[in-house]
Length: 448
Image (cartoon, rainbow, N blue to C red):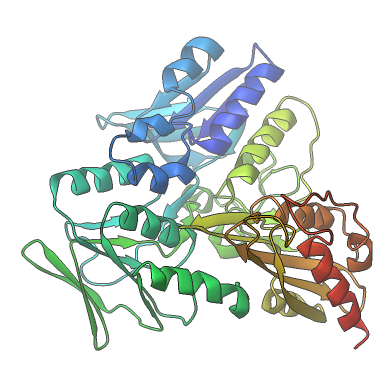
């Protein structure tokens, strides 16, 4: 059987490696348009912050290792341009412009996502960048190496925008952030957002939320970001306003699309063509809380989905339950984490949500280093079900959110979660874990 994979990053190479372990004789071909495969895109901002490191340090496994050690026919510089479903063949062009055609019995589309480039004048100017892949990172590092950059403007205030803010400030640049909507992250509870905003302002970061960028202009090497009456000067501009699924191949082939333009899949990762699978940031998934289709690009999901595709291609039947949108990031010392639904998202999904917000401490109060820790938690009034949780703080946040994520997978009610036997010791938290405090407060609100 011929198993062909379009895309050589997380989902694609996870599927290829797993399929090779499942079936040593399977004919596996991976077609990747770029030169880089199997790399840690999430580490790009941290790599940029360290001029001594090369971007190639983020490659998890080289193309040669896949070819030589696993016998995978990995073809870099091969851009797929068309899927012929009737002939079960993919067509494309190599880097030198010559055409190729590869037949398949089972096909995986793992084309990922691409950075959103706002449709404004000046996005093509030198010094304007996006941050999505290794080549993006190389361009930014090369620019910073060759230019004495002092100021940067970042479009957006999401995960990547805030991580890049930290990286550039650590390199000595002054940074301004600008976005059209008010607030940092649209899902983050306003009380939890306050300490994040305060920390950014303490670090000298300019925050201009509520400003829609009209254009970017250049005067020699100097750039200016124009947003109404606001004009922000910069040596470089980074657009970090989000990503969109790369589903053009699937759409052109007549496959069904889903939320946000992602490729529609069932729980086995099959598309509307049962011989074609889709996985990773190009594909949709099911939300654990709502049961509805969603599109939340996540690294763990991409790798897990790649494994599931490989198992299903090799004769198994693996169904993935879905995602809760669990995520965490840091900006300077502040950790921000979430899982499940925010209050607004829960209301939009048809729940009758109740929310509480509490301030606790990261460690026992008498233990050195205890810091404020903020929790917001939402539950459904009618069923008592836990719907989501958010946390911010400079200490003991990142792994704490996982307890709530597991509870969402289990479909627990808030009163059940409140009885969780969570570990306690003074260096790691108070006797009543902040999540348990929030759960107990939420239970009271159900009957209020």
